[in-house]
Image 1: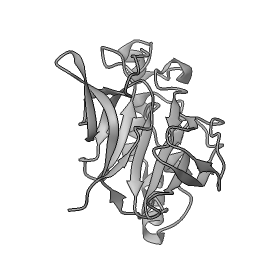
Image 2: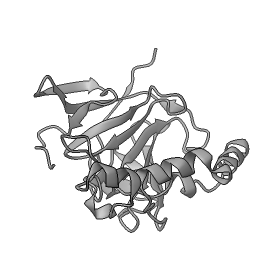
Image 3: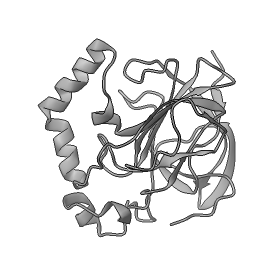
Image 4: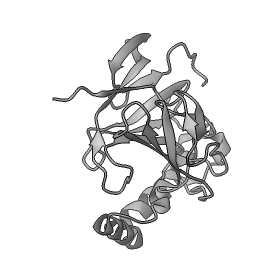
Length: 228
């Protein structure tokens, strides 16, 4: 078994692990969300979050920096995709019952190439300098926030963009994965581990090294106090 690839945690502050790579169709990919103590994603009431559109700037994750996980080269830096303004429930219904979206996804998978903006929104693809056959994919960035360009070299924890709600997104969050190829449509996802972070266990922050968090855990970048 290959050793998981060690990278930096690509966010600052405190986050909830919405997906940890164990879900079918989401293998080895992470979704990181920001929620308060009541697991609400915004400052509005829970019923409004569910049924009504909440101003995006009121979500805790909105505008938080997305960081480079390693030394690398930017292969793609896509910006300009619109944000999704709908409520969580409306977006979920549209996602589950949209025949157009499902057909487009199947066409992309069959072709092995194409425009992924409908699904990924504003996104970045990085190639590792130290391990050239490793690529990072960061999706759903805020429109107008991508601050690097294709061909640019980046260092670990350098800001790339800000968390947004573009593409197929139900709430502002970061979708993150490592890949064996640069094409997210059909790339093999790779197992990774974060160099260091902290996890909330039994009411206390505990340091973790060379591992990954589990779904529904609260985690934060090392030595970062909660921003919520």
